[in-house]
Image 1 (cartoon, one colour):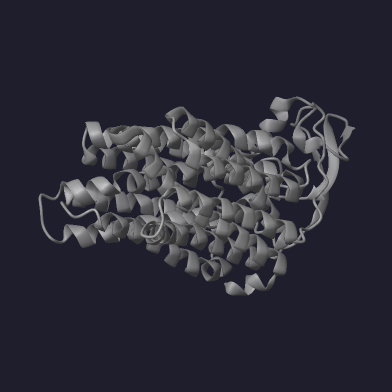
Image 2 (cartoon, one colour):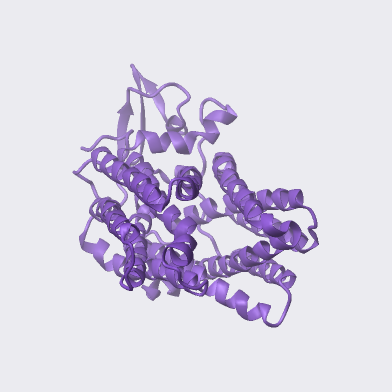
Length: 452
């Protein structure tokens, strides 16, 4: 897997991603302490609102950025986003009002919503070979999982030496280092964008979302995102409730539970490059989604049990299984998007994935918390498990069983008879012929290009 780091451009971009993730992790710890200093016992409410603002920024800003990102220099967009995030992090230590936290969090996450889809869209161009790109996706998954384990530990070590306000400077340094590395990387030539025949801002902002709804595989990915969001919300929101209240264990065991989730995800991310050499994305991703339902059933048994020392290792195993199943779905998702979107639409497609997936979390995060608090953990398990099951079955139905795996570019001249004048796909060299439009390009496997 590490062989892809021999590519100098990818190595610098991956290092930039890792450093920025660590900086973000430090900011997460510091923000919690800052909220407690300002709001005291209401810190949880402040953080909950900040999390909702974060998701709102992702859902709203990412499509807007995707509408113009392919017409802007990608390096400038990513560096500008890093510099914006660094500037916001630099202001956080001077905050003394709750509303200021909300404003700065919105600005910070809006910049992240610009950076991440652009970064994701660059990698397929840097690593055009399918095997190399798969390894890069696994490394990215590992980076996210390791950050969730490493950043809190690093923050704890630093807090023994300095006050939490200094952690924000670590965040600033991380974003500045990321900007420097992106600046030094030699990016591939950007594919020229094609103007939609209608110049409306709405058409541009929704181009990626419409591509998702037009493609059978990407429609299935929407359902898979919901299944993953149901499981990850259960882990993120209710881990502390299970450990402290349900099992009566110490606060020190909460990171162990979250670490089990990360460990399961990392193990699968390490194994997937070889698995995907001989197994289709569809098989891996759908099995991962259906596995989530089985894990929810196991969690229901743990939740219903009255007592027993076995419940703690069972919870760790359940959380690890959740992590493994989620990784089976999330890691190959980039391959699916790359295969389904033409190069000039990749930024919009990745922005749509970023926005739509976080829309799912925006639904499941509060659902997991409210159900757990009002109706009990068992009600949360049943409800979120039902969502995961329904989403998984929907994905199976939406995703055609006969896949055409694209291993090389094949330019084909073809006609579209069902697209309206102004459709984004008709930009460039499309010529009206009879009742349709004729043009040539690499044929992705999506809703606009039927299996042949």
